[in-house]
Image (cartoon, rainbow, N blue to C red; front, side, top):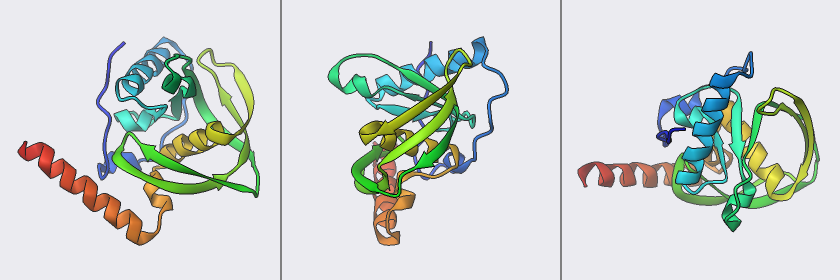
Amino acid sequence: MAIRSILTAPDPRLKAVSTPVDAVDDGLRRLIDDMAESMYEADGIGLAAVQIGEPKRVIVMDLDQKSGQKNPRAFINPKILWASEELATFEEGCLSVPEIWDEVARPARIKAEYLDREGITQLLEADGLLATCLQHEMDHLQGVLFIDHLSKLKRSIALRKLQKAKRLRETG
């Protein structure tokens, strides 16, 4: 397993639409393991492959990570089959948009289908943080960041903060 660098906005690679995975094989499982290690290293709860420069429809998530447990899950070629009209608002952040947090409203409940790391089709009914996180990560697969859900003003403020932080890191 290897820890990979996580791309940060406004890197144009984050806007790539990810391609479906054709086969679940050992190479893909290595990618999933690298993604999980990278996510843990960055203290995140979710990561899409595009965030490490691999535009494939692969997500790893571990909501137990915040409580000190490790229970990583892989979602390959995920699809939302149904989403509630009722919305839930959570304060979201993103490893690709460091130190920026804001409220985003998304469907409160979803039904999704995906392949697990063994290539077996799974169905999932989710609500709460699981539904929000899965939708957030699936947005990445379409080249959408959580700040794209914000007003134009809030998004431009967030991007200016990111640019300023990047300049400070580069000038050290």
